Image (cartoon, rainbow, N blue to C red; front, top):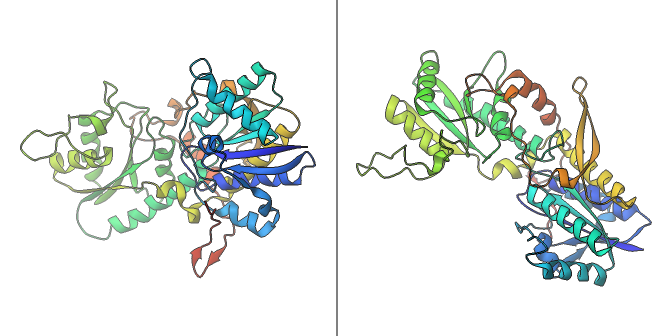
Length: 406
């Protein structure tokens, strides 16, 4: 019998531990696995032999608690392995540890860099004639992994954004005066999460009038003109801004010197894209404007986890591990949408070489012709992903978490 090791890498999400629970559940129940190890702090921790036995999760209540715990239970890292020809020693070290701990299966939960690790380790295993199975389970709030319809973690983050924006709109409209809130949302190169602000809109109330995505060119004059148009008919509005919006030269607005703080010295604006957009509006239109950053709450708010995301994350981990235990290697367990109405999605398996280091951005058909909105196609795509609420465990009114003693 062989052992299995599982790790987590990259930015955490509200659902990443549901995937971990799926991996652990399948592995613990399998007669092919003797011990299930968790690597603490990803591949970095594995190289330092920082492992924990996951046997304690045979307890179903503890497993349930793990599923609702946000962030990466095992800890994370952002290490991208070098090419073998650049540093083969690190691969030799990893495979020596596979042998030392009798590892037959390596499961990595993460985003693009994590899939790159899966790609490189599975290729090295083939080159060396190793029978170690290497597989990836996707996660990222950015929703930018290719081939998979969407990524576990995105639906819950999108739900947080939509709910936060809708509730912000109630707060911004209490005074009889013109006011604007600029909400800066994560997404450096892909605007999927910022686009989710549109899910706060309904037929009777549409608090979000402008959505700025990195997939489009940010034109300051056109943007200000659109804000003026919106504010002719409304007292308040919310503008959703992706942190990665860029000008016509491909420069991030947050790094641009075109928007200047009014200090009299022509100093470039400091802070993120939201603050710069805030300054543009207030200085040119003299409308009360404030910017807020949703920051890391977007990815770690368990109270906003969607049932769809919670269940699909678990299934990706569970079925992905089952596929690995059948001897399949070098794959990512993604999600394939079978139907929109009713919404049906199933776990499917993709060659990791067709996934790693590629990026899925919001397609043109989901972006409005004004480059400052999204279409019904996006709404139809995203709404099912934020649906439902799992039954969560609370401790005296505070969300209960499973924590690892490191």
